[in-house]
Amino acid sequence: MRRVYRQVATVEVPGGHAITLDGKRMRTPGRRDMLVPTAALAAAIAAEWEAQQEQVRPHTMPLTRLAATALDRTAAQRDKIVAEVASYADTDLVCYRAEHPPALAAHQHAAWQPLVEWAEQRFGARLEIVAGVIPKPQPPGALAALASAVAAHDDFRLTALQAATAACGSLVIALALCEGRVDAAEAFAASQLDETFKIEAWGEDAEAAQRRRAIAADIAATARFLALLDN
Image 1 (cartoon, rainbow, N blue to C red):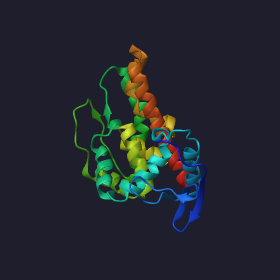
Image 2 (cartoon, one colour):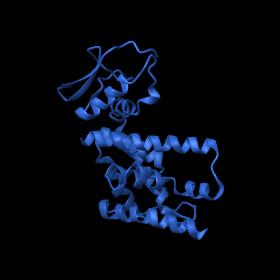
Image 3 (cartoon, rainbow, N blue to C red):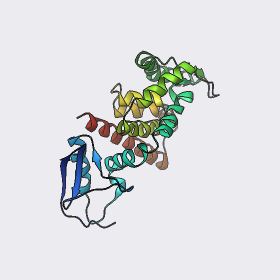
Image 4 (cartoon, helix red, strand yellow):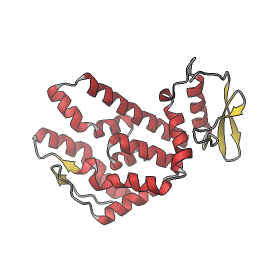
């Protein structure tokens, strides 16, 4: 769509911080006020809108999309989203280890085992390691502990956790990102470990490279969103 506004600003209002376009408060696609918890996040969203040229390109505004999702979808479907995110724990990426080649198994253990141990220490979730790719149910107590950890997030942080979990394919990695246990680059590296191992052995085609860049960008945007919520 065309850019029809000239001035972007932020304003503190009861309940949070709003973004205005030519003095009118911005609304989400669901027609809710774009009201965010921190001045830093409001300023960053405003900067995304200010950076638009003649055409407004939504794909260049990840912070706006995450905030709108929190307001439009997460708030209305919270229980469903908690269950969806928590379900990743039953087949979490970091619990499935290769039996061969030995070099891949060693890489997986070095990158993933500290995160598995961190999840147990932080949330009381003792996950079992599986050799191979055949799914094996995780202990109910571990699943319940991680489900509680997911549910403890407010709507904005739950939105970020959902985005990170989908991008990483791992709830454990996503929780580590949200808790500051890993940064965006470390989360990407952990989630893409198997793919990176294959690329180092066989090379990478253009389509795969583009997909990995998109995943890295999604994780980085989510990490920035979280940092702005904590600012």
